Image 1 (cartoon, rainbow, N blue to C red):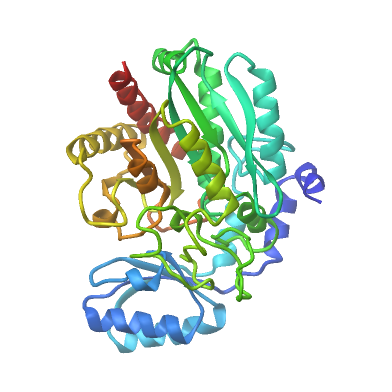
Image 2: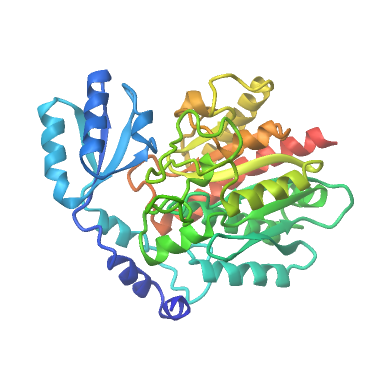
Length: 417
């Protein structure tokens, strides 16, 4: 079915998503001023279905925090009344979610196949991984590091000139299914690597001396589900014993303070930590690969959205990592590089302190495994579109992010020699 849709083009994709009806659904931004107002948000979440966008769980809401959440169309009037009655500071970020879902496909590019300026479905990405490796055999190779719960192969691209004992950087995208700008960035990075090798001195030097392991989409089953059934799905698609609720949050599924703060032990929650660390086939495949290559992997970058942040450990504790000063100065400089292009402002710092505590994240796990340069990017935007960033923003988002990634990679390279 998807092959057919790809041929038909954008209009068909948009129509497919339209059938999923987010008509009239609203996204609210509330800033609770005190504990009493935090309690009101909690009560709201327990009385109706609320999809928390930022933070990603009601348990993380605290006073003076910006809270973005989505509610069903028939509940929005009730929510506005409740907020107004309690004199809570709020605004409607998105008035009709379906309009924003449709508007994602605003790219002027009319592609019948893979395009770097459009969101690509999984089948298109698979074909692209094969093509990019076939067309650039001296720079790119493709391997399979495992398979998903639903039996899809997890592809990994290795990008770099062949050499012995090269240090490496591991970068993954698509942990959370609905964060479409994330896989778009991994694809863009590979494009930039192969197109600018031999022309851009920084990229050429990086690829000569480093290998980049690029995982274009980790949570493939979830990503497919966002294209076919629910654009705003977040978790994996695994079945949970004793529950009718599907999926685990892959970024709460690592053995880093697992299932303590900011993660849920309830399968129906969006931050469900899973039945055990690495219970998900996807997270286990990633962790196994990194463990096998620990001697060469010097940096770990994981790409998420949204909120324009550059985070480093820790998220499962408020304790600072031993090389805090170094990580903080890298994050400062990388954020500055990023903002130099379109003046996009990023906030940086340790995860728990900068946004909210969350246990079981891949960045903390990688750091604890000994990869001392471990960073999480939260790409555009700050909430106007949230997870539904329009295609017209793919190029600028990727162009600016690559500046930060090149800065970090260059820094790591200098330490490796």
